[in-house]
Amino acid sequence: MMKIKSVLLLLLFMLYSSVCAFAGDLTVAVAANVQYAFDELKAEFQKETGINVKPVIGSSGKFTTQIENGAPFDVFLSADLKYPQALKKAGLTINDPKIYAYGSLVLWTLDHIDLSKGMDVLLAPEVKKIAVASPEAAPYGRQAINVLQHYNLYTKVQDKLVYGESIAQANQFITSKAAEIGFTAKSVVLAPTMKDQGKWIDVPQEAYELIAQGVVILKYTEKGSLASAQKFFDFLFTEKAGEIFKKYGYILP
Image (cartoon, rainbow, N blue to C red; front, side, top):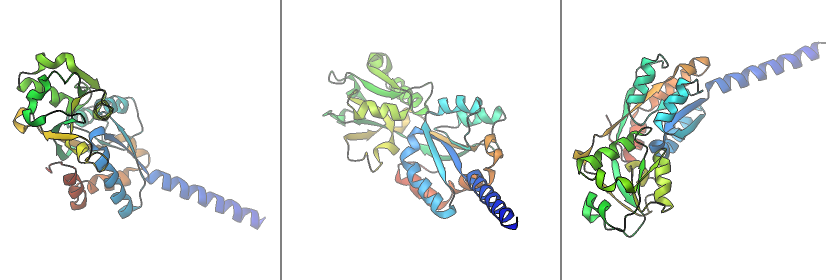
């Protein structure tokens, strides 16, 4: 009888331990422009804390809708501040959104296109399709449209525009050559797997607003991972995390 009790106690302890470990794990909604930097952020954080982090990559607008409908994310790394602020207003966050980095735009091509012309290259006859992230769902897409309007190019090239749901899909259009050229985040072209592909130029900063990217801890994490979520949030503002962001072309706040 004692042996059976011991086995039961051991099983209960193992179940409790596994539940606690699971409770400490994090699911993080990650804006598509951050996905390459996030690989390094995740690895460094896990090395320091032992906390497992599962990223889900997508568009900030789509994540916001999912979170409003109860999606089980602990932390949200948005491509701007607008969406985390909306979630805060809706009572779906633990804390106030905070800027972790500023993102910038580049014009990127894998074709033999002369980028020395700057934005006017978009008018060239060999440019038939221009990839842009959805301005409704992706802040980088919104700013790309602002660039086109700044240079009075939007009405001239709007029939060439092909929209991706997120920066990730816009990148697929460029890398597959479904589009000859496109707007993307600087963090993408600086990623180790991308930096030797094609060529790119910085979009002049006077043509758009640097993209203030915000992070927030979500209410869902109260179900078991709040302490881990706070550790991850704090980690994003450490010197180590800052060096990773800078490596990928972000500007620190």
